[in-house]
Length: 223
Image 1 (cartoon, rainbow, N blue to C red):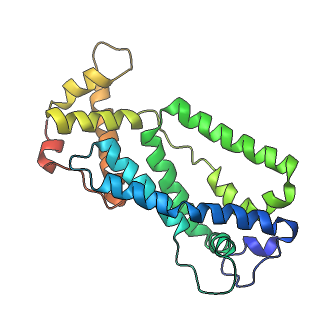
Image 2 (cartoon, one colour; image 1 turned 180 degrees about the vertical axis):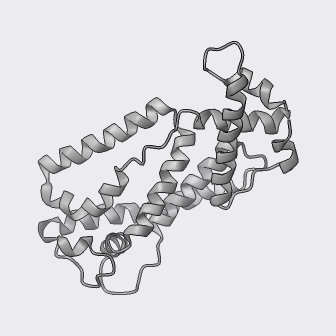
C-alpha cells in the first residue's frame, strides 16, 4: 500500500482482497451523483434563498466535486478510477475536505460538530479491528475525512442567524447581537464585534464557494 500514499504515481496499487469492497463503495458514491445534482438544482433555483440555503448549496456543490473529478478514460471500473484519483491527488483532497468542514461548521451546532467527529473516528477504529485490509486501502482518504483542523466553530452557527437577521430586518448589529448572543451577559459590547467578524468570515466563505450574499454590501457593513 505504500505506492498509494505517493502523489503522482501512475501505477495502480494492488488492493488484494479489498478490491471488491473499494469498487462497491466508490461505485455507490458515483450512483449518488444524480441525487446531488437534483439537490443543487433545488437550492440554486430558490427564488428567495436563506443564508442557510446558500450554505447548503455550497455544501452539495462541494460534495458533487468529490464524485465528479476529471477521471481519465480507461478500462478500469469507475469506482476504482475515483478511488485512484483521490489517492493520487492528496493536496486537492485536503482542500476539498477543508472546505467541507468549513461549510459544516456553520450549518451544525458546535456540540453536534464534535459528536460527528467522534463518530467518524469511532467508525475508523471499528473498521481497523474488523477489516484492516480495507482500511489500509482507504487510509489516505479516510485520514483526511476524519482529520479535524481544530477550527473555532462556537460562533459560526450564530453568524448564520446574524446575517439572516441583517438581511431580513436591517437591524443594527448591536440589536442583532443582543437578540442572538448566548453569552449570558446583559451588555454585549464585546460580543458585537465578535459577531460581525463571524459574519465577515461567513461572507468570505460564501464568496469562496462562488455564492454572493443577496442585498447591497453597504447594508451589511454599516452600523
